Length: 115
Image (cartoon, rainbow, N blue to C red):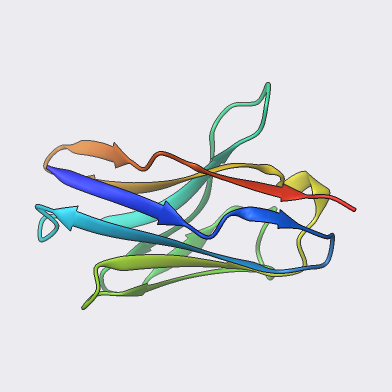
């Protein structure tokens, strides 16, 4: 099994920055990809960014140029650096890992972008 622990959410002003972290534990050697999803009230959960252990990445069009996903394989941790934040980025952000034929999710961390 894989456990995911997220941190770094909070309240930030438009144009500000936040850095989310997600640490994976358990059977982590089978994890092939990790990423971040988000879900705003009344909306469907959507992909934000994903990264493989080899470092290849993919981003939602809405965050390209503003968000950067990275990973520290030694620490089994994935990060999401969020810059130039907009109110539209307000959502619960969930860490995701794909391993052992299943998707594993963190508990979610709230990101609120507001003046």
